[in-house]
Image (cartoon, rainbow, N blue to C red; front, side, top):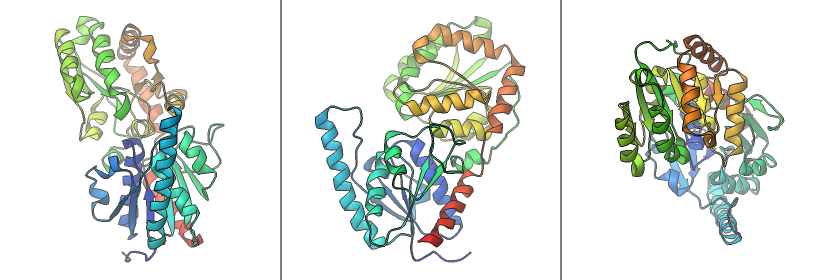
Length: 362
């Protein structure tokens, strides 16, 4: 293995796990190739204990979202981004990176804008995890030299290179794990994501309680649930005699997903990528405030790997959809195969190839 390059690769990522997990996967792939990787992130993600970034440089840059707020907060967010650009520019001037790759969201805006203004400008790469560009990425796409896509090009995406969405190594290791339809026991995994789990704490127990008792008795439910509502959800599930395992966060999602007969989840880019890599049938409930989640859900559903459900339809409709699916093992197996056909398990390596090929331009 060759030694690190003099000019590093800067990864700009932060915010939710949907942006941060793919960045970690890329960093691991680049480090394995001997590259020097530097992380520029926000305060929230900097607090995460990332083993991948722990051995390298981490720089915290100010930044905030500016959409969907009143004008005072929008102005404050714009001011934070402006301060972030100044901070990021000082850091990048010292680092003189060959490539800056942004993983979307507002934590990537300041580093990417700052990199664009450098006299010795690095190559700018934007990776998007979703089937449509979010607000921040629509801005960043205009200044990027290359764009890496997680979904095949569509009217909602610019022209770019299809790399897929990098998933955590544990997920990639379970790529195309054989799907066994449910027998006497039915494993249901519920993942709410960082923004959407609280609503599930009410919706899912209500839906489970409406299932026929014989079916309910076969279900082993594993559900992500925020700590502030976890006891309420536990009590509701216990009242319906449903076997459950609830926690705010699960370390080994790869094993839980591989063992699941059905996944009920939000449809963030990372969740959809993980479902596709492992190949598991899902009921996807997009977060209503995110157009990208709806586009992601539609993409997997169009391929036959998932069913879409609107949260506003309520618990009774979710119970009916769940009961219908669980009564059709052949349908579940076909959905698993269809989801798996969309999976790109080596997305981190494909993205690392793109980054390294861009370095000759620097």
